[in-house]
Image 1: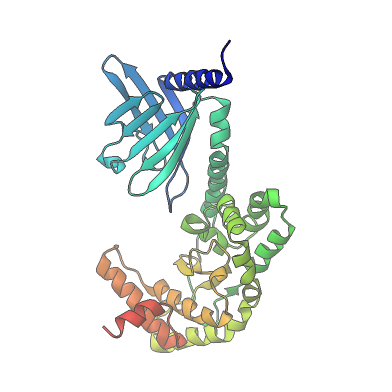
Image 2 (image 1 turned 180 degrees about the horizontal axis):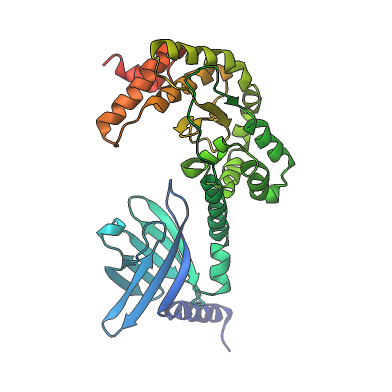
Length: 346
């Protein structure tokens, strides 16, 4: 009979042998990659084995439609080291296969260090792994259809008093948040906010709100921060007299100026303001005091007058500098304090 310690040693050695013999089979693996500061990326890893060794490809649809060929593959028992070419930032994937051979997980080293996980294509494990991303992609498709449905913008008026200050999207957002169950936040934001909002919100989708799923993630991650600006959001009308005065001042300084509508919307704490063909879009959640709004509106109003044909650095310098300068002339404030604190003494 074996002693208890001998049994334990035998079990340990047997377990190690099973792990060491974990099969790595050729085929496709579907999964996700996460890198700091980037959205979750769908990945498909294709492995091929031949007499000369392992080869394969890695498809990242959000990066490009063609897969990246593997420049080198090294297998060490239940692990793989995959190297990608320069067009994939010379990324290195260090993957470990699960004991049942159905999943792999590990790290990806590119310009930043992230994680990657995958399961055999078509398996329940792969479906479960990519479910959240599939939901996100569907949400973004729905949001993009909304953004594309915005009607053609009417010509802006030359009358500074004719521009509308549209604030209806702010109470709409908060009513939606108050009514939405925790497990259905994205669905409510899609149906009750994005689909019922003004054209300003629809213009704010691409590159900013992105989708109801993205917005729901931002709200869940930063709910305290959102709640902290709620009172200021609902009080934006306090800024209207100063905004109107800035519009009239620009007309005095620049008679050719035109004046679009101004939309106060709520996004993901990533944009204070921008201009679209339909008007000025102000991310109201970025401002804890309505007194700060005339400055950002004036800045974006100057951008609305600008029509530079390309994206050269010098043109950007003139675009932003003139928006700060003229915006300060008409509103009595500018929005880039950090840049001015450095720039003026130097």
